[in-house]
Image (cartoon, rainbow, N blue to C red; front, side, top):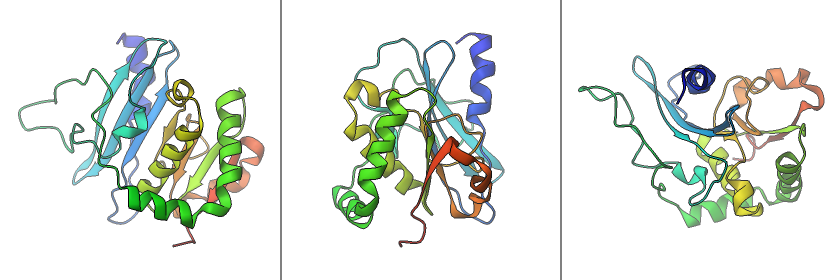
Length: 204
């Protein structure tokens, strides 16, 4: 990766922990100016946060969808004592998939699915379409939304659907699908038509 791309990627690897002891996992796929993608995972540690990422070059995207890397054992939880981890050169191996948990998730959110899928198709196909903001108490539930979103798109288009499962700054996040926790929704009131909000934090 060139120095210019490294400068573009650096802010995408940041992580702002929530208030309190929580450590939501931020899995994100971001599009870089040269047409490549950056898949990153960041999580809170005792002294700050740890980020691990893989640069996905090239205009063609094949194979596993980036969101399947949720929960992958290939991600490092912290920087190893003997130095930085080995660089990843592909999308990490898929994490565990709980079919029963997904079925329960879909059943609980059925009333919102049709509108959500319409917004996903719009944001994937129309430049400048409002981003989709998903308010959930757990980042894992945002990851499930992203999995569903990729499932309704052609595989190639799902490869380029950008997302983050957690941020504290939803308005400035560059991704198309943005996960935010309930305590960080205040800024959304001033965002106007730049986003579509699905607040599912109260259905648990």
